[in-house]
Image 1 (cartoon, rainbow, N blue to C red):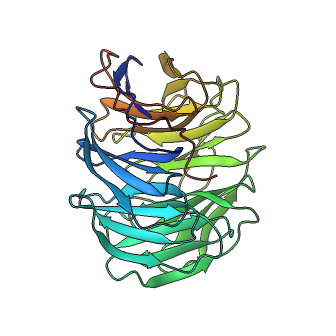
Image 2: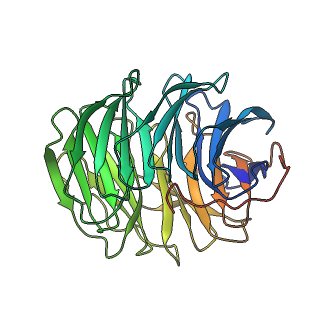
Length: 330
């Protein structure tokens, strides 16, 4: 199931969204905030109406193993998926048809995939400890493998300039790479004392936020690699997911402690009371592009959408079968 939350008040907007027949590992908003995509252990991808919770398209079938990561292109026309089957696929977000793929090259599970800001390239991070950059139109490998991490690559993303890629790893470090040459630009950024479970960059490309199994969140200067604020503390268990709002003013985090928190990205102060409602760990969180909603996925088998101002539930639940949501990696 899926839940969407109000990013200001912490109240539930929509959900739970249900329909997958197995655990859901990844959820993401489209840039216009109208759709949500989900990827599941049932090997399928589904696209939902973020306002009504209705299933729009799907299931998208083709992967032969659990889908660990899904993401929209910035224009909302395509979806990229990464799977335990070691492959990456690109789909038409309207029809659900396969456009390109499978993209093959990783030797182990693909944990994280993301489009560049203009949708021309895709970056992937894998259990094989490498990062690869692909042509989103042809599926050809452009750059890689990028090697340097000594643990699985759990999270990858392009910075807004499209020239850099940030990666987080089970080796407790963050690295920033040249997207054209694959060379290491900055890093390793060190400070976390346990696995980095999630990273996100601000829309201006100046900051990176990381969430870790050490229960803290850290904000870094993307140019220098320096820590900007003191560790954000408050969660009582590992932080599974973090994301910036599009204006870069807020950060949302989800934790094994079953709560969602929203922070001031400049001061590190907690803005909104705990978003409570999940009965198990929160595994995935993301802002809508307008910053008005938060979508969350949890081990309690729910996905919910919350109104960022009133905290009220807008729509839901969307249900067919029970499922369990984890992060975009096993």
